[in-house]
Image (cartoon, rainbow, N blue to C red; front, side, top):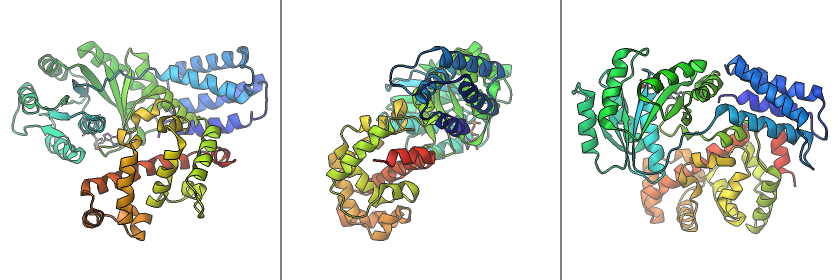
Length: 443
Ligand code: GDP
C-alpha cells in the first residue's frame, strides 16, 4: 500500500528516540530525512516535501512538549499533524439519497469504482443503483453489469444505445426505487473537447448532487492537472484515487489533490468490489504511522479474556502470527462483548483507530448479542475442518450448515463474510512492526 515504507522506516527512527526526554537537532534531522526519503519515493512534489520538513523541523525544535510527553511522542504527534494537513480533508459524503456522477480518463477505474461505491453504500444501509452511460468503451456495459451483480446492487445499462443522455434518462427512471444513483460516464484518452462537452451534457441532464473525479494513483503528481482541468470544466466535489495497491506513486496523487481545491472521497485498493475505503485523513495517517493506544488496548483485552473464562491454551499471539480461524473469531467476539463499546475498543487499535472505522462496512461493528447467538449456532453445525479453514465452505456446505443449524443460508454467508473482514483486520496487525506487537502483548 502507498507510503507503507514511510510508516515502517519512520517507526524505526522514532524507536531510537525511545527513553529520551529532549530532542537534539540531530534527532530531528534524522526523522526529517526519513520522511523526505519516503515522500520523495512516493512521488510527492519536492517543494511540498521541503515545506513539510521545514515545518516539522521548526515545530519539533521550538514547541515545548506537553508535560509528561516523551521526545518520541512529541515528534510523532507533530509528524502526524503535518501529514494530515498535507493530504487534506475528506470529501463530505452524507449517507442520504443522492446522485453522484463519476468522471475521469479512460482506464482510470471509473466503472470499477461505480460498482465499489454502490457496494459501499449498500453496506451503509442505502439502496444504490449504477447507471452505466459509457457508450464509448466496448465492454464497459458487461463489466459494469457483472460487478454490480457481484456487489448485489441494481444496475442499468443499454449496450445498443448510443446517446449517453438518453441512457441516463432511462436509467434513472428504471432505477427509481434506488436512493443513491451512481452515474458512470465515458472516459477518453486525454482531456479533449469532446469528452468535456459530453460530460457537461450528461451533467446538465442528471443534475448530480456530487461530481466525483476518478484518478489512477499511478499518475502521481499529474493528479493536480487532472483535478484542475475537470474542476474548471464541470466542477469536482471530490476525488477517488484508484489502484493505490499497485503503485509507489500514490503519495504524489494524494498530496497533489490537496493542492487543488479538491478533497478525497474514496481510495481504491484492488480489483474486487470490496476493495474500497472511505478516505479519512486522521485514520489514514494513524494507520501509516502505526499509532493507537496499544497499552490501553492490551489492558482491556486482558481483562476481557479473563472474563471470557479462557482456560484452554488459546493464545492471541499465535492468532496474530498464524491463521485466523473461525474458532479465533468466536473467541474474539466473546471477548469483544466483554470489552465494552466496540467503537472505543477499535479506536485504540493502530490501523483501525481514529476515523478509520468509518471505512469498515457497518457489519464489521455489528456483532450484536443476537447475531452472535446465531453465529454460535451456525458454528456448532460446522465440522472441525470447516472451523479451522473456513475457505473450504462452498455453496454445498453452506446449504448443509444452514439446514443443520436451522439458520438461513444468508446468515451462514454473513458469518463467513464477517470472518473474512476480521481476517483482513488481523492481517493489518501482522503488517505491524514486531516492536509494536510485543508492546501490545506485554502485560
Ligand atoms: P474505466 O475505463 O475508467 O471505467 O476503468 P475500469 O474501471 O475499467 O478500470 C481499468 C482497470 O483498472 C481494470 O482492469 C480494473 O480492474 C482496474 N482497477 C480499477 N480500480 C482498481 C484498483 O483500485 N486496484 C487495482 N489493482 N486495479 C483496479
